[in-house]
Length: 534
Image (cartoon, rainbow, N blue to C red; front, side, top):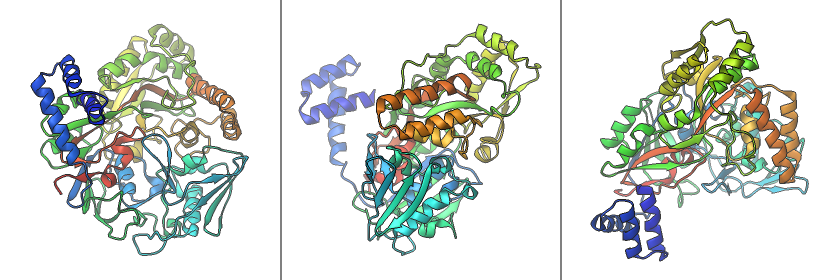
């Protein structure tokens, strides 16, 4: 409701709507004339306070932190590490809130006519936090490390298909095995932080070109940073003197920390409390649709999930509409057992939506020949907001089809290191990626380190390479459609819902923008926002 009024306020500010029209529209939403005028006045004061300010300690409360976390960009797999990386490190390019490429350590990339050779002009005069000047050689070595399987990098999948990387004067040059017009989007992956010497000697030392330096590193508890006075882009980022990230995996604890003023922003607001929290004084809930999805992932190479009839039984058993209503409370949309939705420009909306069907679930379960032993689904509160409740709903509908789904609740600490991508069936989430190539390369390419369903299909890999080489978007969309249908019909991904990204912030926090690329402004809130009271 507040977000909608905020949109109308913007129209008043630009002259597109009169004050009287605003009051009439507000009345239609249930606001009195006095309340509408008060809202306008508050908005005007907020606009005056919307000039970036330096100073203070900006604190965020985040889920997705563990005692096993490291500052190594290659190993980042959840929200707390993602936020950490943005504080001290940067990539060659980024994707902005509008889905457009933004040059960072590199000027805008240039491609050859066949899109097989890409040249990234590297900025000069940028220093790492250890005082060393960043060079194209640092870029080369950083990318080489993530292309090495020994690094266990989450970006390993997107590095496949690169035939050669080299330095040419002030340029970093990438030669591809096949053309890929989306390559710069892949270089924006948050794992691909540029480190001195590639980070080979000290990958977890948190030395990068970002606006902050690491001061306190207590995995699973808190991480604190101090602003760099020599940061190259200080006119646009790094407003607070200090940034502190508190690890708050429990949703109730996160909400309480925001309400008490302990933190200025929190991630992953539970949809069940979002509306109530939005009505709290001096707080607001920020929700944006995107590519993120809450899922259950099964290893297709491990019994009993190596049987596609069993996988189909589970897919038909889940009630997607119920999940969106009861878990997301409307903050999202139904999924279709593939990681792509309409937020992607080449999405094919003709792929049939899988409906909830107890009859088909029972039919496929019986056809699978499963012996009736418990099918263990591992879940944790930290998997996604409402994950435990979602698993319970899944269990209830599965039982109606005669599927013996059993829930095993796991602790938050260690979930991303000991359960996800290791146990054969668990709850998980994906933040999505800017383009389909990156999403598929990261999680579904046979050689991807983050292939959390163990999906390995030579035909799928070949289609991915074919799509990269195809510069005709019509034909490319057809290829992606075929890949999506393969996952929909045979994959180990059970995707009941695409979630809105819901954060909540204090009224003292300025600079917040809606960014559907990831939670907490694509994990950049700590470096792009400021404190109005500073």
